[in-house]
Image (cartoon, rainbow, N blue to C red; front, side, top):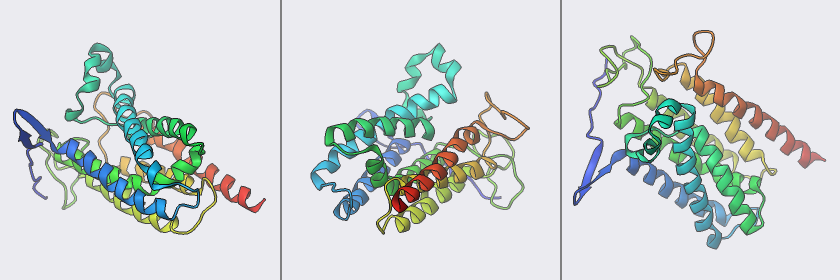
Length: 261
């Protein structure tokens, strides 16, 4: 069994205001994604420019934050949200939904695309390879916050989390960091280095993320107030990720059929 490295969720203070590691991880994700997108724009086959980059990042970041928080409250904590809507703004406590963030990013990029006269798929193809930077950083934030821990286990690397009870658990946040952060980034970055049909990069992102999230959910403890949705093992995260797998396959088939036509 490994010892959980209890880390103060407050990284430092600026005067009386605490700065949380959770927020810093999202800042790392956004800045890292921005830097890599600057490299992608230089070789973009869709005609994007460096001048457009700041607008793309702004719309995507705003959509991710608003959609991620709202999605978490709607998908995972709806009763508490109805009882106290102000919980929506307490982001320092954690609680961001990837699926809500994805919907928010799509809405933001759709608005951005209308402004730039670019298609939504062109924009999602551009940013998809850098999204794992933010996903991976967010999972490290979950680990520091000691939240979203895994199911009880007897593996040698199991950890006892401060608020996870007395049993060792899978450090599922680190599993997701490896799958949704590192592995997904490597796959998409290599795939997108060559010119691909419109929608292919976005399709591969949806397919791989959906599969990786479904796998990770087998090790992650479901929210106590939700539990398993069916068969004693299906979780909310798996149910929300299955459509991504199907959309990803459909997008890849459409992209390459369109290219061959």
